[in-house]
Image (cartoon, rainbow, N blue to C red; front, side):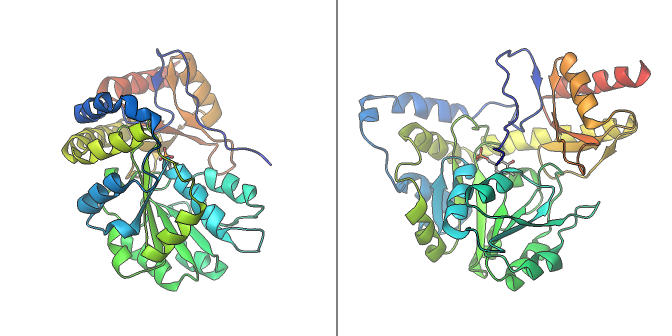
Length: 340
Ligand SMILES: *Cc1c(COP(=O)(O)O)cnc(C)c1O
């Protein structure tokens, strides 16, 4: 099998890094203070295996009871737990619309499963009927989707959850940059699982923390396949402190949203086809360069973006929204390619 290929993390810090959807702004100063306090002799002790303090705080922030929450070492860990719990070589274990986050393919292959996929249409409207028809034990909806940036409306996810045979996992890694979340479905759809991460909106990709929200029964089953100590002491402290300062995250999200609007307008002015985005990145197709070629030229100019070799994605690149000066440098480089 092929393994998952993460985006490049260059050792040379001079690159303008718009390739892995990290937040360009730093985490809350409160997170750094809490981490400094947590660096102590207590590190000789194992961390809390059930992350009680973090789950209690998350329950308060998201209005969900703690027995409906499990924490992961990033939401990738939570996806791994879901696949371990639900997916095997049986036909129709897992289904999703493509193109989407390619880790789902890898996790399916690890379980010995062939994922059932349906294509997204060109406008990325969620193909609910096709997904329901597959009848999978696990149906995944990435919303906002990567790499398209498009959001599945709550009504479509609700419709899917109501009609699906198995669990519906909503991967909301980018939802803080979007208009709406599926969290409200938890109260009436016991088969819904919502995944969140601290990596994007909270600027904590380096700490590896995610949250899963689901019915108490699903949470109980996931506990059986979880590594006991999947989060270390420092990650637990950092995530808790981040939730104590949601205003910091929201202020950074607002800056990214403003920059996103501006970047999309500038790219369209240069003749790019840009999908509407509810995330902290945009998927854009150049009028003159294929994705890989554009990636190479930008790399030479010191700017990293992400391209995908898949037939349905190779015309474009995915660009993370950066700081205003980084976005300006990107647009200037693209403008120079158009005229030379
Ligand atoms: C970034 C990302 C994740 C994983 O985030 P971590 O919490 O860093 O593991 C999950 N799903 C999607 C779609 C992502 O883009």
